[in-house]
Amino acid sequence: MTNQDTEGRMRVTSLGAALGAEISGIDLRESLSRGRADEILEAWRTHLVLVFRDQALSTEDQRRFAANFGTLHERRRGGTSFAKDKYGLYEGDPTIREDPNLMLVSNVRVDGKPIGAVADGDMWFHIDSGYSERPYRYTVLHAIKLPSSGGDTLFANMYKAYETLPEELKAKIAGRKALHIHEYKRTAKVDLSKDFSTSPHYFHPVVATHPETRRKSLFVDRLMTARIEGLEAQESEDVLARLFDHAERPEMIYAHKWRPGDVVMWDNRCVTHGRTDFPRQEERILRRCTIEGDPIQP
Ligand SMILES: [Fe+2]
Image (tube, rainbow, N blue to C red; front, side, top):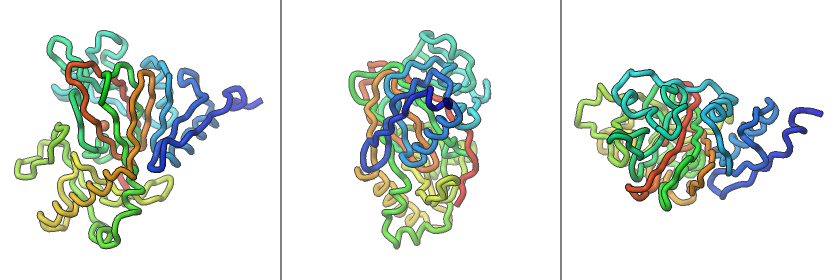
């Protein structure tokens, strides 16, 4: 009997025409065989976003599960006041304290200080760490506590966004790079009139080729992509606005309504994501880990 026989059958159910699949029949607290991990990877390459319901992962479980798919990203310790002050203070889960592999996404505050990152309200579409030389390959997010409404995560299929662009727009962006800047905002355009040299930033190809599927995707997002290299400022603005509007059309999107216990993971090389608003006074806590990535290939 192989490992996969003892693991039982994994079921993959599509979550709509755009992207996303629910995976059932797996308890993520158990160690995965390599065969099972490969099965998940195959579903991931096809569906881009995978949803596992009714999981209850400890920090160690989450770390072990995510490590099946690459090298866990480690936060720099104390590198910035941002990291030092905002992470690892969640009293309900003391094991997360000082854990460099995990980060809370939460609006909860302890003694006035947020326990996690990107705290309140809605958030524009973005790529996790898309402003860095090596954006995270994957994000694995586990829901612990949720508001009574809102706070949905919207995922956009950026393969489909690229493939359905008008040919004249494809021609305008072919071979170009764009500047991605992180200004720690949630719903505002990057301000290029200010000096951004101290903000994390990087140029990536506008059209990326996925290293495994070899498919082309649009690698831009409304929150952090500031400028297309080689175009006049106004033309860059116009082209980016058209790209963002196109990539956020309903037919590109899967909207995830969170339930406590959900584990949702996505591929940052071909998916952007954003968040809907939620009541500010209600607590929302999710635990995130990420997998190290590589330079984005044209
Ligand atoms: Fe994000």
